[in-house]
Length: 129
Image (cartoon, rainbow, N blue to C red):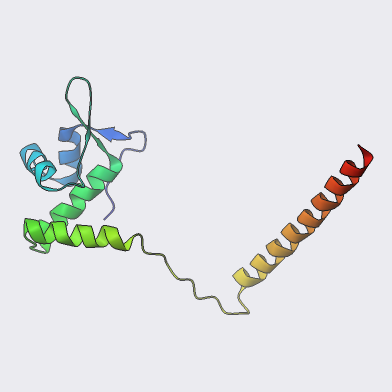
């Protein structure tokens, strides 16, 4: 789910987080008490500071509860399981003739050449000291 974050902002008030996710502030406070994943930092004044990650988590919780009809316990379990699995890595299917493989081979050859040159220079400067 892609949210329309203002590019210059890293932290959001509870009202801003509510507007971004379409959720009322009292619901956000309730979810904060139920879901360990939503833990906004607090300013000295006690005001909540939601990060982008917090807002994305809130959007995911809202999707699970309202669209997929999970219970709160079910959503908590789902999010815990998702966190345990870690991030999903996208697999790249490259065949031996693809341009990407050729480019990677060229880069590898260049790096290998640079390493050999650096080793030569480090040995020659060590011997002259």
